[in-house]
Length: 257
Image (cartoon, rainbow, N blue to C red; front, side, top):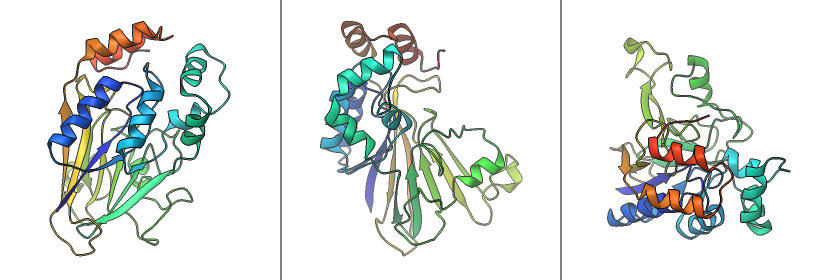
């Protein structure tokens, strides 16, 4: 059995990232996959990119990672670009869209937001059609296991961890845990959770890696406390353009417009 840590949505929050990496190390997990959004929001985008490149086996592209490579016309975007620099921007621009592997006879597929775009947001209470579309093979999903439809989808983007085992992806409880047994789960956010719990969030999947043989596997959601006040101090010292909103979001674990 092998364990793989899934982290995402760090958003330049280095104290949160270091706390999660320490927790992963203490659990004896060597393999880490990042589901994107290394940058944006927080004060240390360059440091976050460098640390992720050091520690993660695979990094897929998030909406912020791609969006920040475009021409910016607002203070926050320009500030982020100036901190990141040309080489790191080029790195973000070439990140892959998706990653998949077999685990205990099941095909796991991972991407940042949806099967169609890093900018297409699928919320926890999305429609039946949106949930089913997450399992589609598209031009972007880079199937390495042929044209097989994934059994499990892990994604990020919404900063809200959840796991739903479903047949038809509806909200009808009588249709859950039957038939095809598709599983849709979100890994949450390391740097800016939006579920009301400000502790960093990531996932661990465990099973027989690269095995076609059916065997037991598991998905675990992990919450890790970190020094939020230190993150606020770093943002203040860096003169982060959107400081007030950032401080509120990481302090409360909620979205602030």
